[in-house]
Length: 117
Image (cartoon, rainbow, N blue to C red; front, side, top):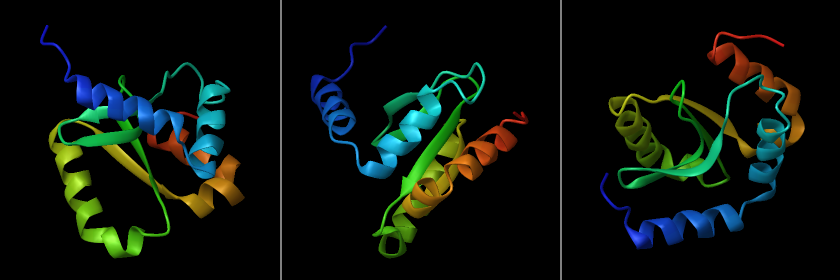
């Protein structure tokens, strides 16, 4: 198994340690095992990108879009296309959705996975 790049490991740890309030809110949802038996990990390296929250099985990538999303739409589309080519199913939420409708976000994730509460 190839060794992971120490710089990328450091960056992933830094991202996990400095989560935004919406990232904390979503992490609480995912960690509370409210999404059944699916295990999520934060800041998973995939090529040149870090997936905000990933379920390695069934390869679901959850991305949060902040206030700069409108200015970064092309970059986000490229990122999504790359992740999909790597076999990930990508679902995106805005920070506002996570903060104002956490139950709806949880239900959307479950629906994407073909599950229900």
